[in-house]
Length: 60
Image 1 (cartoon, helix red, strand yellow):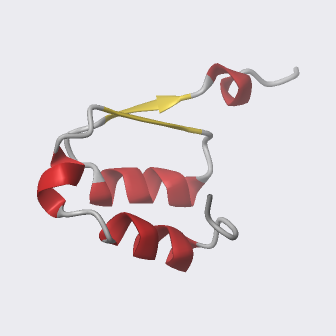
Image 2 (cartoon, rainbow, N blue to C red; image 1 turned 90 degrees about the horizontal axis):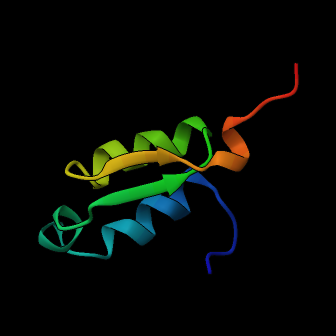
């Protein structure tokens, strides 16, 4: 568990894993918060990004 969701903390955490290990990640599941999408693309280039269904549906 990280102390918060600050971009700098997230990037520091994911950087601690080797590039080789990060390239083996198949799926990245998160909400639609833009920094999460940026991290997924930068640190997990081979992963399919999945927006969890709780955050996908919106009230009309």
